[in-house]
Image (cartoon, rainbow, N blue to C red; front, side):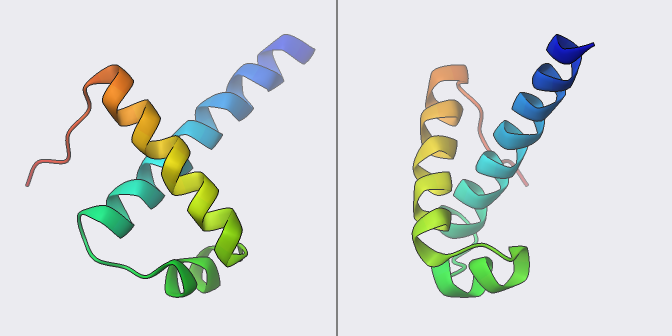
Length: 65
């Protein structure tokens, strides 16, 4: 069951990373504002945005709307 939980956590981390990346880069949210809304530090948001960018580029994800 441990592998299942790690897999679910990875999916959750990747989803949050993509959300943060798109919120900052595409929707114009600031790191501070996003950090307050998600209870994260500003440096934590920066790291998450970078990870989201790598995930989006690697998987060729785009935000369309």
